[in-house]
Image 1 (cartoon, rainbow, N blue to C red):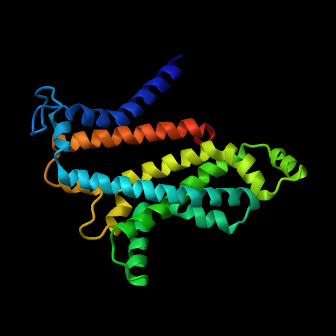
Image 2 (cartoon, rainbow, N blue to C red):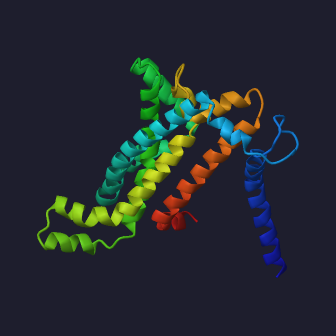
Image 3 (cartoon, rainbow, N blue to C red):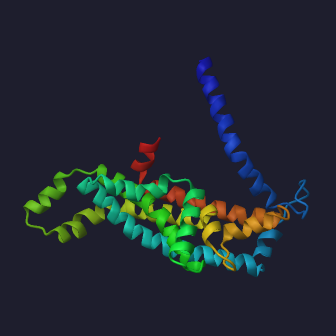
Length: 258
């Protein structure tokens, strides 16, 4: 009994440490004070003020565009990689696909920066950010799709081949519908990672190109205002929603990680 009580206390303390700072950000986004040091009163002024901030809106639009395009391309490539890793068991392929997932973000950001500038002599901007986001998102999509395939009965595909179905017909009629929840979950995960990314984007954005995380970083250099709390709250809500949807579409992946 005592051991169970201590475990509950430890769990509550851990979750409080993780989520109380987030709760404070949400709470102070409704604080009627520009100083943001003490609670003064309730207001939604900071959310309406966001709609008039052209710089923040431009940065948010850039983030949404990058997230939509990069996650779409990464989902297609990651799905193919996940199927290939499951079907052919090549030793080199998992290493190539999953290395960006395991690599520290700062190392990946520096590597991509050197590759774009010294190898390709590419001007940093929207295109470099898209390539970078696609690079680190492919592995996450491949992991989810591969986990989805691992839980399936291989006899289903063998039965389709025995009945004369071509490889393409087997894929479109059987494989694709079965792994579609995993593909959707991979897309949502890639979108979430892209719209939230700061470290890699910081290295490959270039001059004059700003995303929402980069814009928030430039604003907090001066002070953490309620306006920053408001945009952070909206971004946090979007992120948690997408992660929740991804966990609903691919629950077996989350169970395997728990």
